[in-house]
Image 1 (cartoon, rainbow, N blue to C red):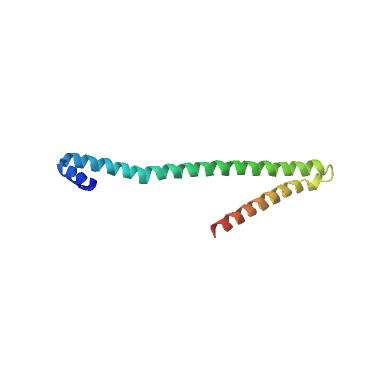
Image 2: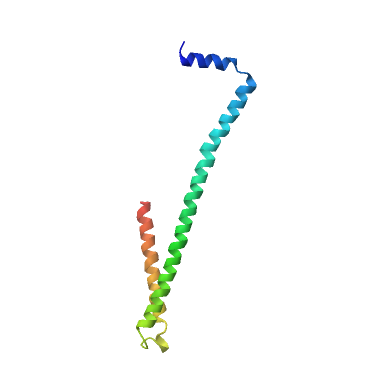
Length: 111
């Protein structure tokens, strides 16, 4: 007799309660495999993505502030009085260029 034939004979000897218990265990294992594990992986993916986005945003703010401070320092007394807004405009321009570049990379990835 083959192995498959021996297994089918053993299945006939099991009681209904044993088969029901095995079925419920199988269903629970399958549900965990198909729902809990993918959700855990998705949560990990979203968590690392959020952490990366937070670090990139922090770096962007620091780079913008560094640009403003560098313009203020390197121009000396030329941008004082009515021209104190120029370094801030430079920082905003840098931030807009960085945001535009980021959006262009995102759109390119979506195509």
